[in-house]
Structures are given as C-alpha cells and as structure tokens.
Image (tube, rainbow, N blue to C red):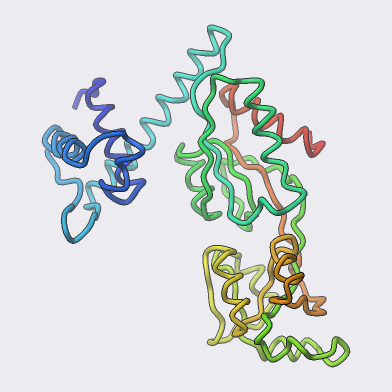
Length: 298
C-alpha cells in the first residue's frame, strides 16, 4: 500500500479515535462530526482491506488487525512529527508540538518544577505547542518507546532499555490512616509494626515486586493504578497506605487523615525525567535542558 497524504490523514483520525476510546470522545480533539469520523474510518478500512474496529451501540472495540494498524500509525505519525521538527530546525526555528506525560498527584509537591519549566520553554519557543497529559507510569514508558510521548516525569520502579533516566528529586512518603480507622486515635507509643501488618493496605499496582517485598501482602489488601484512588481508600478508614506527604497534608490538617509513626522501608519515590536515548530533536532537548537546570542536574 502506498501511503499518501490522504492515508496519513485517515491514520491520524483513527489514532485519535483509539486514543480517546471511541468516536464521540474524539470529536472535540478532531473538530469533526461523528458521521465524518465514522466515514474516515470506513475509508481507511476499505483502503487497507481489513476490519479495524467494532463501533456502535455496544461501544468501541479494536480488532486484532486494528490493534496492529494502530501500532503502525503511532510509529508512523511519531516519525513524521520528528522529521518535521528536524526540517524546521534547518530554518533555525523551533516549531511543532512536544508531548509530555507525567504521573498523577505531583502538582501539590513544592519540589515539582514542571510548571516553571513549561513557562521557560514557552518563552523560549513560543511556536512550539505543549501537549501535557497525566498517565500511569507503565504507559508513560511504553509511550516514550513507541513515540506517543517525548518526555516522561514520575516515579518509575522499572528500568526499560532504550530510555534515558535522570533523577530530579525524591518524593517523601509516609504511612496514613483515615479518621474512621481503628488506629486513628491510638497513642504513638502504643503502635508497632505488628499493628500495621494486621491492617488491610492500599497499594499502587505499578510498584515493582522489589518494592512490594518490603510489606507483608494479604488477601484483604487493595491495589489501584492512581494515587487519587489510593487516597480515597485510605480516607475511607478501611485501609492504611503509603501516600506522598505533600498530597496527604491538607487532609491531615483537616483531621481526615493521620500520619502514623511508621519507620518501615520504601518511604520515598525517586522522581525521574525520562526520554529516549540517542539523538533527539532540538525542541525536546531544550525542554529537557530547562527542566534539568532547575534541579541542577547535568
């Protein structure tokens, strides 16, 4: 199949629909009506000769061949964007879009300098768009490898080959329980590790087995993908959990959470800046350099 501008446009529409998990959700991003988007996908299916997805009242679902086409489209569109940036650099201008993905629940951390880095970058490269999203750690690493993201920021327990990691700072954690929990009113000197071991814990599913080995897991423990979900479980009073101090503090001040006197392992998370290894476009390098300079990291 020969790929022309028409095919690239259809692939971009399909990529947006998959990324937004459906046609209706992709409308705002694409600025197209649902019938037009549906017609674009039908046209792409006819050009490829394969069924890409099921769509209708039962929702949106990729076929196996549709999944493969989506992977190809991601790689193709990312490569096109990178080459566009390189060609723009020949004219001495910085244009295009830089795609940044960060983990959730960082903005309340006073050590989080991303907003400042964005301001500096926007002043230095006003023609470059900034696409900032909040994603799960594993999705950020996978996205950088496959070209969906240029920059990743967060705590990553797993080191992936082909990616460059630079440590920015360490996010402090502590053990907390909610106001309705049995330990909430217990005096500090009456609490020990055995009391915590007997509780149901709320864990983050993406934490590595190495980190999880620091605790005694039980069938009553809950596992979540986002810190906000973990916070809700701890606030319920049914679980204890290791939470970022900066995120928990407002609930402590309001009397909804208690910081427990726990000195166990894994009480901080290393926050890294991640990008692909090798030569990177000037826009990505400028953004990285601005953020690293704010932390005095070379």
